[in-house]
Amino acid sequence: MFETICQTIPADPHLAPRVRRLEIYRRVLDGTIYDALPYAFQEERNGAGEYVPLRARRPSVRYGLCRIVVEDSVSLLFSAGHFPAVECAEPEIETLLADLLGECRLNEVMIDAALRGSVGSVAILLRVLKGRFFCSVMETQYLTPRWREDAPDTLEQVTELYKVRGAELIGQGYLGIDPGQTYWFQRRWDAQAETWFEPVPVGEGLPAAPDRARSVRHDLGFVPIVWIRNLPGGEGADGACTFRAAIETSIEIDYQLSQVGRGLKYASDPTLLIKEPATTDREMVKGAGNALIVSEKGDAKLLEIGGTASAAVIDYVRTLREFALESVHGNRASADRLAAPQSGRALELMNQGLIWLADNLRIAYGEGGLLPLLRMALRAAARFDVKVMGRTVPRVDPDLRLSLRWPRWYAASADDRLKEAQAIATLVNAGQLSRETAVKSLAASHVIGDAAAELARIAGEGDQLERNGA
Image (cartoon, rainbow, N blue to C red):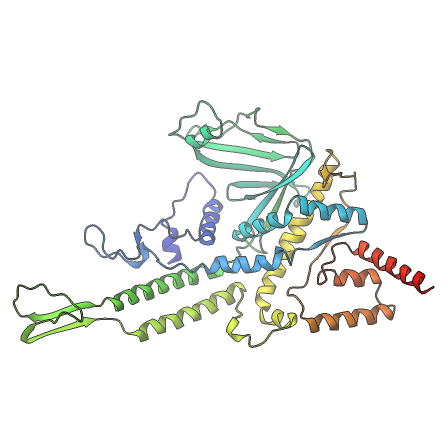
C-alpha cells in the first residue's frame, strides 16, 4: 500500500531522488501522506458509478504512530527535564555557554531540529545580527552539502535550490517577476559569504547571477551551518529515518481503523432487504414504528455487521501497533500495567527500546549537533563583537574541550534519591570521589544549575558554622 500511495505523489525530474524521498518521509511525519489520493474514505462510487478501491481513498482515521514515536524519543532527548548541561574546564566559559543556551533558546531549537531531522537529516544555521546570536532550523530537502576533500567532516559549501511561484517572489519584494511563472530560487553558503542569486524561469537554466542587494559577506572562515545526520545508516548526506520500518504497518492501522468505523456506521443504520413485497402505494421506511407488509411468501431483513468482526479488527490493530513500535524501538509501556508507582530504574527497563533509540539520537544531535554549534558560536565571537545576556563574549580558544552532561532518563523516586545520596556520601568520605564530582552528580535531580557556585555556597556555610561554633 505504501508504494501505491507513493506513486500518487508527483516526482520532479529536475531534482535529485533524495528530494522526493525526504518529501515522502516528511508527509508521513506530518500526516499528509494521503492528501494526493483522489477520494474520501466514504466515497464508494465515483461520478460514473464505478466502485472506488480502498487504495484510492483517504482513510478517515489517522493514528499518527510514526509521529508518536518521534515525539516520544525527542522528549527523552531535549525536553525541559532532559536537556544536557555543557561542561568545560574553565568555569567562566561554562557559565557563558549556559547563558548562550538560554538567550538563543537552544532548547527549543534542538527540539525542532530533532523533530524535522527524524526524516534523515537537518541543518542549523547560525547568524550574528547586531551583536547577537540567532539560530534557525532548516529542512534539508532542498539543501545540497559539499564537504572539503582534505577534511570530509567539514562543510565547504551548502546550496539551496528549489522551484517557487512568481507570486511568492513578488511578495518577497522581487521586481520584474511574472506572477504566473515558475522560477528557480537559489542561494549558497560558503566560508566567506551567503550568496543569493537572481531567480530564473524554469526552462532557462539555473540561477548564475548573484543578487548583490541580498547577498551578505561574513568572512567567518567557515560555513555557518551545522549538518546533522539523524541515525547511523542512510544514504549520502542523510542518515537513517527514525520511523521508516513502521510506515507500512502504520498505513495498515489507518485503513483497518477506518474500516471499523465504516462497519460501525453500517451497523447503526443497517441495509433493508425486502423479498417479493406486496404491491402498495405506501412508502416503505425501516424502523420500529413502521411495519413492513409483504406477501405471504415474501420476507424482509436488515443486513448488519456483527460486533465480533469489529472486536477482531481492534485486536489485530493492537497487534500491529506492538509490532510497529518494536520495529522502531518506540514506547511500548501501557498505563494499565502500572499497578503502583515505579522507580526510575524500573521505568528504564520497561522502556529499554525507546531509551536505546534516544541514546543513539544523543550522539547525533548532542555530540554531532549541539556541541559543534557551540564551538561555531565561539569561533564567530572571535570574529565579531557579540554579547550574551548583556556581557561581551571574550576571545577564547574555539577548540576548547567541551562535553555534555546528560541527566538520567527518568526522575528518581524518593527511595532512589536516598540510596544515591548515601552511596555518594560514602564515596566522598572514603576519599574516592571529590566533592565537586558529587555535586555535579546530584545537580540534575536537585536543580543545581551552577555546580561551582553551589560548592562556593557549601564552603561559605561551613565557614559560617565554624565561626558560630567558635
